[in-house]
Each structure stands twice: as structure tokens, then as C-alpha cells.
Length: 207
Ligand SMILES: [Fe+2]
Image (tube, rainbow, N blue to C red; front, side):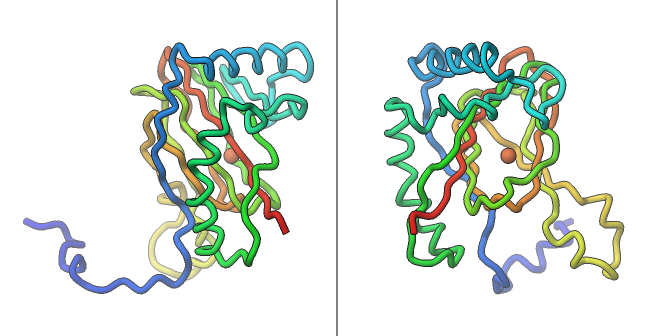
């Protein structure tokens, strides 16, 4: 017996809004790399100076979000990735009708989650484009989740909105998620003894 939705598969869908969540792939070659060393030093510097307990991190979690002195998008080692993404982000900038400018990285940090570590629900206020890149991710590291942006618009429609309020996006190492800052998101808690390392880059417009 086919899936109930199969009957729709050959029918045309007409988008009523742009696609807001994108997945790209990039091989960071993180383990044992200079990039891993940079991230380790950044966490050490953050522990010594600003503390890694960002408000949204719970469990066994470390964030360099409060460290504005050292940010990954400043690193020379990060430039190949930033350059690789630029044409895609520029295209998304247009897809999202953001006007004639180009996206430029303005803030970045690293989140590291050990077992039980997670990032709670949040958005990135005023940020038109966000990158979440999984530098390190293994089985049981937990997935990315976003909150249904139509939550309030679905008022009055059949169904219980609370039951599918959160959509889970399975992610793996090398995944680069791109979305606007208003899309509320969180992580599942890590259930792995391996670190989950996520790079977050906030972009703004250059005009
Ligand atoms: Fe985020």
C-alpha cells in the first residue's frame, strides 16, 4: 500500500514564499587539523576571559558567543570556507529579496557540546542570514530542530499544533545549514561521548 501522500507526488507545488532553510556540504577536515587547534585555543581564551556559559547553552556545553575579540570568521584558515559559501549566500540574498547588497560575515562563534549539552530555543535577532556548520558530528550527537514558522498562522486549522511544532532536521558532519535569523531553532541534547562542534556565522548586508 502506497503512502497516503503518494497521490500528490506528481502534482505541481507553487511556492508562496522563498525556501528559508538550506543545506550545503563542506568538508572541513576537522579532526586533527589546524582548524581544530584554532577552536581549542578559542575555547581556552573564552574560558579565561568571558566564560563559555552562554545563556542558551545547557548541560555540558561550551560557547564562545560572548568572545567578540576572537571570532572564527577573522581566521585566515576560515577564508576558504567563507569564500566557497559566498556565491551561494549571494544567491540566497537575492532569493530572499534582500535587495542589491551582498552578505558579509559580522559575528561568529563556536558551540561545543559534550554528552547532555544542547542549545536551547532561540533566534538571531536582526540577523538576515545565519550559518550553522557542523565541524564535528557523530551518531547520537543530536539533530537540529526548528520551530514551525507558521505556528500562529495555523490557528483554526485542524490538528494539534503543539504535536508537530518542532521539525527535526537530521544533520551530519560537514552539513552547513543556512537560514534567516528569525527562524527559531535549537539542538537536541547530545547523547554522544564525542564532541559536537558547531560553527555559527551571522551575516549582515554591505549596503
Ligand atoms: Fe542559532
